[in-house]
Every structure is written in C-alpha cells, then in structure tokens.
Length: 251
Image 1 (cartoon, one colour):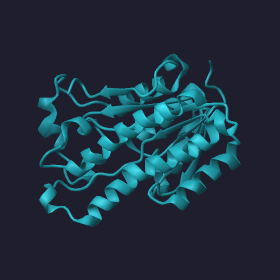
Image 2 (cartoon, rainbow, N blue to C red; image 1 turned 45 degrees about the vertical axis):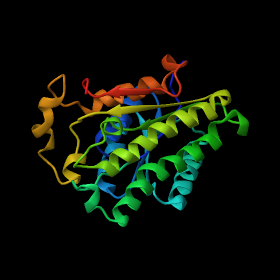
Image 3 (cartoon, rainbow, N blue to C red; image 1 turned 30 degrees about the horizontal axis):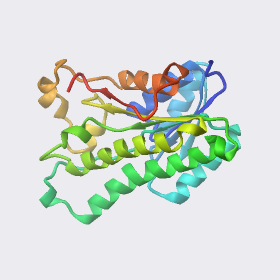
Image 4 (cartoon, rainbow, N blue to C red; image 1 turned 60 degrees about the vertical axis):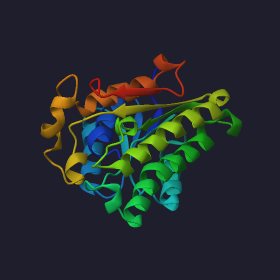
C-alpha cells in the first residue's frame, strides 16, 4: 500500500536520527510533522529542504516532557492534516557521563520525564487518533530505544540505559494492548550512531574511542536507522508488532 498522503509525526525530528527519518519519510510520500524542542533554525531548515525536494512538511515546537505541549502538538497535526497514520517516538536526552552514585534527583527526573513519560504521552495521543476502538483507521508507532537498554551503560549513562529499557517494555506492552485495534507498535535499538547526541553528553570524541568494540568496526549512520524505522512503519512489516530491531552493527 502506498504511503502517499499519509501523515507521520516524528518527535525530536529536527536533527540526527529524527531528521534522517523525516527526510526518508518525505521521500517515500509521507506528509511529515516535525516536532522539535528548541532549535527553530534546524527545524525550519529541514522543512524548507523537504519542500524543495517536492515533499510536504510542517514544524511543531513542543517539549515532549510537557503534557500540555504534547496535547498541543497533536492538535496542531489535526489542524494541519486532519489525520494521523504514524508516530515515531524519537525525542530523547542523555546527560554527562556519571556513575549512579554521582547522579541527583533532578537529572533522573529529567531523563525519565522526557525519554519515558514523553514517549508514553505521545503514544497515548496517537492511539486516541488511530485506534479502531476510537473510530480511527489504524496506524503504526515506532519507538526509538537504544542498544544501551541491553548493555546497561555502566560508568557512563545507567539512567539513560534504564530509560530505554523502559521503552522496550512499553513497546511490548502497548503492542499487545492495541493489537486488535489495527495499530502496530515496534521499536528500533540503535547502537553507536554518528549524531550530535555524544557531544550533548559531554563526549564529542566518544565514537572514535569505542568504534573498535563494535563487531562491524564502524559507527552507524542516521540514515541506516531511518531505513529500519521506515520499514517497521510500512505495510511490508504488516505482521510485525511488539518487535525490537537492533541497528547496532552486531553490538
């Protein structure tokens, strides 16, 4: 089935993996709603890029860690397109490298509020629009997890790894909850990917330092993750739900 005219919302879509997903989705025929938290320049530049290539996109500012912002974001999609066919829960944060005994409550609360609660709130709003139980026509959700969820990230980001472990569990539970309502829910677990998230965690040289521990001996590209996401959203994955796909070079 063609994706032409379908509407996809990507949270944290202005940079990195999110931006790669938006570009690939627009090329495939989706009308793309690009959520972003603060970088107006990057979001609007991506919208312009997609439109210049013949696609359709809008930018919606909002913090997924705020319930009011999440509700407003989905209402903006309603107003612009009048439908929602797919959601990618990509927005997320990491913090500076630290041991658990060095972490404070403010760091932990921010991590879980954005990475976990934000994804759950967005999924809630998507289900309300897509579920046959609510009169919707169905759809697909892909959650962006991390290889950290199974590795634990000791000595670096145990809190981030734990937040992504929660996303894995949420993916499985929600998939089974809405399996009879024409909604599929899956996740991807990226490994070491060449994006700005490493610099935001205070380790701009992290990729070079750990590239050697990846079985494929290289970092991944954002577009390689995006391809996996687009496959899970597509009808080619019509019998896949509750699945977690590793995109980690074998790590």
